[in-house]
Length: 174
Image (cartoon, rainbow, N blue to C red; front, side, top):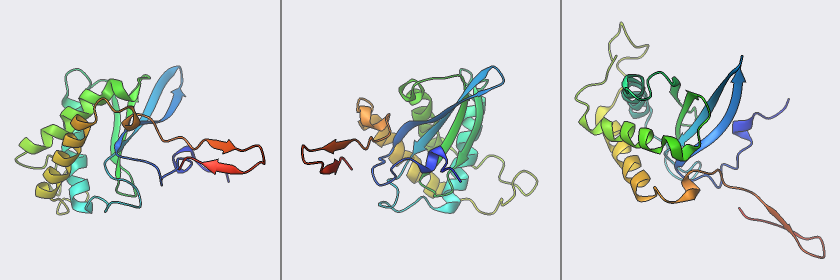
């Protein structure tokens, strides 16, 4: 079986950031999947499951209520590895173009007083939330984004270029 695109990225070299994961055409419409990576895979501790669930609820609610972006949002959800989220948007934008949206979404978590939709009627595991830890992770990521706003590395997946010497020896950048 062919390895899917998200498993073909060198996870030993990914840093936190906003990356273009894939672009697709559905009918005649373009949709883009973004990798919103909060943690370095296999290096940093992953996000607590309950906090991840809370971030999913708060940020999904924020995105779908943002007056400038609400009609562009298709999906917001956690990665199974608990190092980040996937965002799917209509259209095709460079990761830097959604920086402000992502920064505002994570910054908004700090003012949350409750978790939207955290009831038995609205959520499949409504008891598994941790607002305090969600605020911690969101504040940490928002600060990281602000500090690295002009760092192009947080917008481009790492490349593994092979350098080959005259004698045929291969070197890798990661």
